[in-house]
Each structure stands twice: as C-alpha cells, then as structure tokens.
Picture 1 (spheres, rainbow, N blue to C red):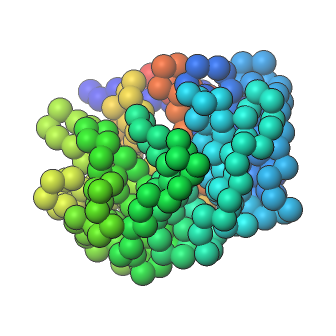
Picture 2: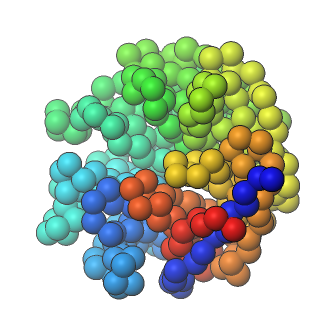
Length: 303
C-alpha cells in the first residue's frame, strides 16, 4: 500500500499578489516578489517582516532570488531592469536595463559568477557580476516570451528554458544556439524543473494546456502526462525529502503527485486565489507557496 502525504500549513500571510518566492539557504528568510513592485524579506520562524524594498513604481516584480555568497538579492521586473541590493544594508548595488521587454525569470548559477535572465523579448542573457555585470552571451531561438530557466543538476554548463511558443529548449552556456529543442505543448509553457530519479534524469514542464509533462532529458521523449489541473500550470516543485512533485495553478489549487508512480495524491485549495509560485528550503523541507492574496508556509508530512 502506497504512503500518502499531507501538506501541513504553519502560517499564512496576506499580501499583494505574490509572483516570486525564494528561501535563503542559511537564514530563516523568505524573499517575496510582488506584482505591486515591492520585494520583502520575511522571517518565517518569527513570522515577521525583516526588510522591504520598493523596486519599481507599481510595475510587477516577476523574479527575485537570494545570492547568499554576496549578501545580495537579484530582481527582474517589468521595467526591463535587473536590480541588485545588499540585503544587510538595503544599499542598491547595481541597476541596469537588461532586456527590451519584461523580465520573466532570473537564475543564479550554482558555482560561477553568472546570472541568467529571460524576457518577453524572446531572449535569454547571461551576465557576469564579477565583470561589472557585462553581458557574456545572448541566447536566441524562442519565438515568444521566455518564461522560466533551470540549470541541469548534473552539469551546470547546461540549462533548459521554456516559452509561450510551446517549446522547451536545452542550451550550453558556451553556445548562443540551442543544442536541443522539443515542441513540448500545444499551448504556452510557463515552468520547467529537473527531476533526478534512480533510473535517470528528467525534466518537467507545466503549460497553459493545464498539463504537466515528464521528459527524458537525454532522448527528449515524453514519458508521462500529469492531468488534473483546470487552468494554467504556473510552477513545479520537486521535493527532495519525499518522492513528490508539487504543482500550482491558476485554478487556485496545489496538487501533490507521487514522483515514482506519477499518481495524484492530494489536491489543496488554501483560499488565497490563483497560485503563482512555490519553493522549498532543501535542508528543512520548509515549503512556501505564493498566491493572489498572499503566501503560506508549511511542510509535507506523511499522511
């Protein structure tokens, strides 16, 4: 008999619409990027606001990430700029126009001094923060908004991207052209993440067609389609402590799937409207979920 899991909510915080979440790797801090243009750092243990940054004048912040090795936060927004702040002093470290349209995603390289950004201008760019944030390379190949990026966990010179053109593409940091591409969905693709299993490496894509697809990363063959959401799928999370996949959607639900059988275990509606973002602190298994009307913090437990 398979073990089922529950999501245990610790607390809920009402706020403006949450578009981005990131958990600090050491401190009990949650970085919240809001549609209102504000970024906040919350202490989720003490349930209190630590710092707030007014980044744009009511233009959405769509991606905000901690860069703990420099005590920075990196922010991409609809003003087409990348903003960098020291989260200890609140000093603005850097601000520059990075794209010709809204910035959808920023990703920090796990080892090198690189930041990747993707945009509605159909481009992906890599920036070297050790070299005065110079643009090292521009990656071109998508024909619509580039929604999300993910580094390959087994080779951090490789990353994948998804776009509203329906495609998932795989890139090498050294090459401006994609090394692989697949027409992943018939509608736009919003999110991508890698899944490491004993039998190999996979990536998952979530789409406006309401499905999540599981792809073999080598053959780019779709091995499973997860169906159940009734609106756009916005984010996917792999839980490293349990064999689970969590997906969130504009249908206002969080769904928990078994990462071995791919069966749906649980559907949750926390009453905070559409769900946009999800993240996990890998050491503590703390999960955060961002919605139209705020965010919640909790843990997956055995049912």
